[in-house]
Length: 332
Image (cartoon, rainbow, N blue to C red; front, side, top):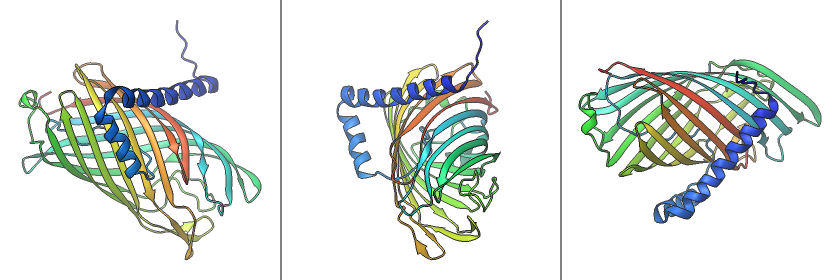
């Protein structure tokens, strides 16, 4: 019988292999696809910034009245890129994250929309030098949950499951707003936490254009943060908005199978502690790959990986993950 004993060596090998796959696949797409990927490169150069999550197919049409239950696992390993004035140096952080999410597609004035809620739980372990002293951190708990509402206001009419097979995507334009609530684990005596002890709101605009089975999706948003008045020892932390740009090239192979190559760039987010501005402007670029495989009419699996290309300030990590999705309702 096959034994699935995923020890540390297995994870290191798998993470490295996925990171190499992402880089090679991206270079191959640039080499073989001609003009369209050249636009991707240009947009990366124009719009680099700090991001984090990579989410292809955020702006697609979905039959209304369908419910989605998702459960997933992700493993990340990496460090922190910090400014010269930061007391935290040489960080190495490993994190196991379990994700539970629910989403529902809706009819919003004749246009397709969606509501979703995501609740992550993480186990984090790591070490770093803080003020020239070695420190270790081991913590488990909830991350900050997130809620998002989105609507496609052009090119994606609200359709039932029975009507949807006749739909063919051309150009979709949509918008969303995401809110993160400060309910995750947080300790003001620690620099590294799972929660952020503050709210953020992220409005986002997206455009998705299809050429047959190939789809190019571009989205841009801005994260606005409230202050954290219990930051590391009772200080007050303010942060400027962070602009996030994502670009995804997706190809549908048929029978519910699709794959995407993605990039995300975040810019901004300079912080101020007790009125003193820090030298920590974010200019971070990540790229990733996603593959979705159907199991049957109601179930599917998504495999994904991402890696940092350039990180000026913030978390610099490799990530691999898997998500199981179950859908029901709407006449499925």
